[in-house]
Length: 254
Image 1: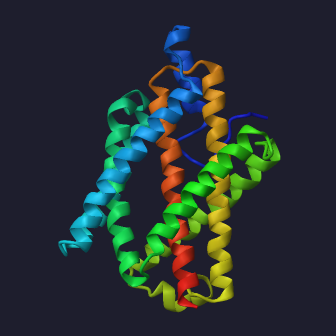
Image 2: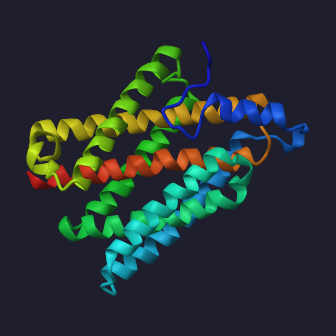
């Protein structure tokens, strides 16, 4: 069984092994855990900067939210797809991904905050707290990325992704998903329970991401893979934040 499993499609065994096999590298030019986390911190600052810009445009100036939501989401998706196949471009495209996701996250946050005042600061605080908590749990091996843990978590993540994909398709055909599935999308106990479950799955995916980064470092992946690892970690981090917003919005409806 392979040690390389992650629910995050950007971080997988082949992504790291291929770079090690195809790229002759010296030890001083290899991926490190500290370097990856530093680059993630830099990307996080970039995301927060562009998120503040889009938030300000929507809240303070009354700008149109949809161009930033759609542009950030689609632009971020395109950049992510390119990065998956062109990992060596990570030092250039990973920061761009952070900026685009920031536009999307800031605009979405403004929309949630307009409906539920104060919810964004709660979601930000919870997301950072959970992220730090998961890192400590992984570092001290309180939660271990065993084969059973990885397989179960990947299955749950794929199931959630398929559910979201189906609901997105239904909305494209003008199906009112919220009305037809109020037990999931509503503010009742089942809906809150579903969102809490997704938040837990997103948080546990951070454990898999940390494991992937550690394994990539141990394999001696090239230095640019630090940017790729930071990018993959940001994908999960943004997902966790959005699920926090969804959960808190349901709690505020009660």
